[in-house]
Image (cartoon, rainbow, N blue to C red; front, side):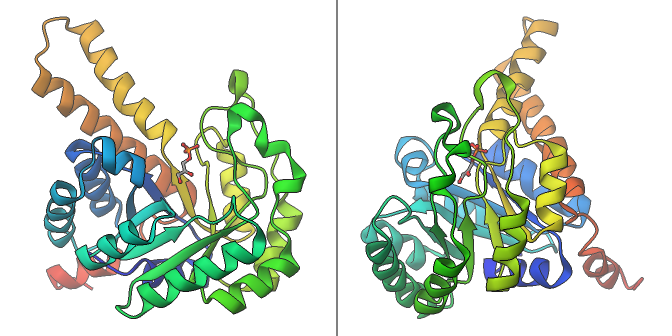
Length: 294
Ligand code: 13P
């Protein structure tokens, strides 16, 4: 069922696990993610950003499809607008039923980020839509931003930011970055800072740039307080590789079967992540209740 991201993340925060948030730009990704969530008895967050929306994942087509698929399953599914900056797009998405807005003011000076995030919180909360903010800056792996300590989140500043904006969750910069790391390099995360952020803020924390972060890092990040992990690059690569491998094996394969292969592999990928993050099995009781076997 379509659910507020705040409800999903508060449960993850209270029970020390994390939920996968996958950038999903078509039916194969959305269906793979939602059916994967149901099969794993896990919550799931479907998200896409403004550029993805403009280029391919058009709002008017994606929203009815996501709502339809989410309402067919018993596990909670959130719909998040990823990295939004434009008030008009944000208002449109809130009105059309997104259950969370991630406002990204992390490239702005601190006071401007705070002011604009607070505006988005007041817009969204008026209709029970939750908000994720970002403080510090999760940059690009290709620019080695992950290793730039100047971009990391400062716990004391974050405490003020959360109190003054009223965000429901905070994306923190602790050593990951977006996109592929050069030559398969695994980033080094600042777990001490993460644990201090968790202790200081006591709210759901978000890790952007999940792709290529490595299983060990992800498990440790969850143990230190991460409750949502964003994944885009690796998910796209799973879909692409599935199609290329299928074609290699069967050069005459038609387009429909290539799409089916992509969906199957994306579903497996999502379930693999749910096991790493500890969200698998968290909603088994819903299914038991539905069948009267609780
Ligand atoms: P990756 O593409 O590195 O997985 O980052 C995704 C992300 O953080 C989306 O907000």
